[in-house]
Image 1 (cartoon, helix red, strand yellow):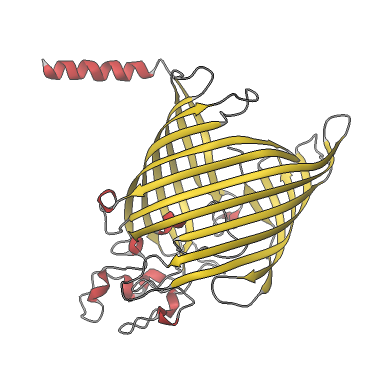
Image 2: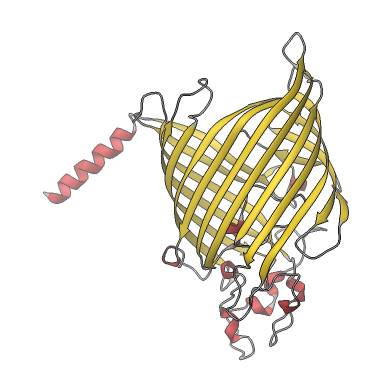
Length: 406
């Protein structure tokens, strides 16, 4: 009788799902520099939302599943054995010094992730196309990864870092047997396979009006992630961390002139985005370091405290191709800060961080179909996190970017 009741309940739940509508949304698209010259996506995330009843009439009640898969490029920035960063003299371990080849070594990661989310919107919408001004949510997330040597050996991304003996956890030689646990790269130890799961809470503020050549308002996102070792201990790669992340963007259209068809003739727009990340834990995988943006041409590091601010001034020209394309010229200034003691280091190694990074430059951009960007950049790195001197950099070729207004 009990089995019959359980079967009946499950049958009711499954059949009731057909009474709801499902909506699919693309959440993220990213490119890989080695794949098709970075033109086509190599990683995509999409959300399947179940349209259920509204707890608050007029506001969205969301039950969704976010799925993502693809290949992501990454770089080794810390000594696998002791966690020393690339700029430290202590990069080379005393007993095993064949590590210089791993400094800023490129590798690829096959990744798949999911997020089961329940959220509720609040506030009055400005129009039907906008999301709720405030959206509060909770989720259960998972991240599976398998890291590999660069799949396509190109001019800029080549080599076989995982052929280095330090990553061979099957070797029993006394000289390297202690390196089965890689403090600096916990997600790259053993067979370099990782399954990390986490509990998350957050909210989104959606009050930014985005148009082809104008912007007005503010957006903000806050996310707290708790990923204990008990939820990240399924494979040899390990995960154990806490992360608090905040991002806010505000935009203002200084001036805009349109023609008789309501197409942009010229406009000046200023945008500022701010980001804060607090990240701590005993085993922090590379994916947990991810931020919304970086200081231009400066690699992020695994610091407990990360702050970034980017100010951009846009000049948009005349729209053409019936409004499907618009050129722009953008000046930018980025400033970042890293603080605290570097994460993923041995107890005997303390690397205090207290420095700024910064860069400025220009970007020439052609925006097409409101999601495809074809651009060229040139800029000056004032301070980087590798202890290098200031220098000018530019794009070697014209770049492509797909960006959706989620």
